[in-house]
Image 1 (spheres, rainbow, N blue to C red):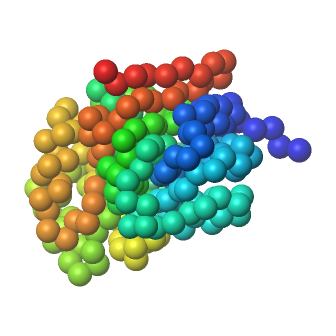
Image 2 (cartoon, rainbow, N blue to C red):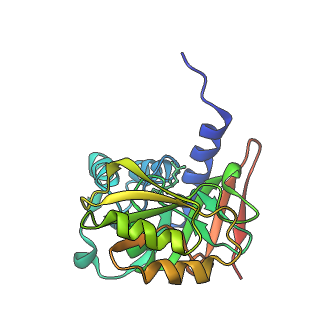
Length: 223
Ligand code: 5RP
């Protein structure tokens, strides 16, 4: 049998830990990825009386397979809590998300929530956002025009992934190098016509980050 990597064990620890913030009766936003996967598994095992909304088809299918109630964002309206992973977490709690091409739905769901809790392993903590690249969801009407506008904001390269988002749009990645002012760049990217959503999540959205390492799980609290 294959040994699980230390990173996989840490992801499970972080994901399961965050499920402890969910209480019966809550409306819960479920993120996407291999870390929050374990939050969803834990919630399924606890069989709490909760109503959820999902940020991807993958998460919807996992949650419903575990017997959880999943409805659309419009049906649920507001959320008590949302839990999701991240690709990068900077010291000011700014995030890069979208490694799984789900950042548009993830941002909508996080913004619906009173509390947004992020689950990561130690490898996601970075001194500055940037090395991962910034995921972009782009309409395929004029991707070259959008890429040129993103290059004009300082990206050295914009690449296109093979897979599309669950919304049917293109997914690109913009490589800016270290990003000194993610909040300003986020506003500039939001102003590009045809760019549906980018993967910079401002730290102001984040309540806490659950970080699991090889030995222990800790929390970074955004005060
Ligand atoms: C999906 C995401 C994920 O939360 C992010 O990619 C982290 O994934 P993982 O927990 O598998 O490392 O933003 O769009």
